Image (tube, rainbow, N blue to C red; front, side, top):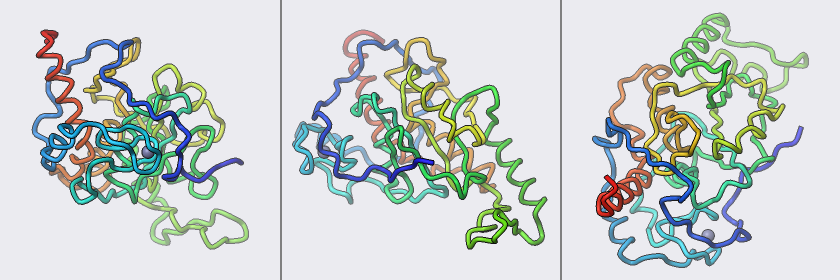
Length: 286
Ligand SMILES: [Zn+2]
């Protein structure tokens, strides 16, 4: 079973092209309920200043970049202490389609804000799944998908079913990992697919992912300015999907009230969204 290391910060091969926004082959999408309002965010002042400076060369790959390099997953023109950093309650793995234009992907936002908990893989590389697949879930809509609430209930029931020992032998020879995660009350890793609506089939039909429980974020609507033609408006940008998943995870798996703990995952996204919105208003499109 093939799996690979997540991408590290040394991929200087990709073309250094900054993708202009908004994309041309997209349709307008303006949510009416303004879900990006009222977020608890670090100040955008540093981004406003960096924007005035304009694009700079990425010190690692030399590409012309604004705010961050989507190839090297590093900040450009910003210091680390100017950007919020979050610790997440669960590990996030993102599988990126190889044809996905890097500059349009929001996966890099998650890696920049939560560097210790987010790993990005380029398909056909996927995370190692053999040992711990029972506590890994895949966030993707499908006929078999369940909500985060249902997922939490299922894990809870599984946990209760294995109490009080909390141990379950996964292998006959009782390997060191056996039972290590069995009976956990929530998934320990969550996989997201970063791809356009049309390109996801190849990844989602990969046999290595078939055993995973699929989770769908059914009630969220996207604010992504590159909303794709033909896709439902619940087809979220990767960073939105991660954010909404974590909010639900916080409430249903950790059983805590949500008080903006993960809002800063949208630090870049909300700023870019605001810019696009302003540009549309001034162009008379809104
Ligand atoms: Zn770079």
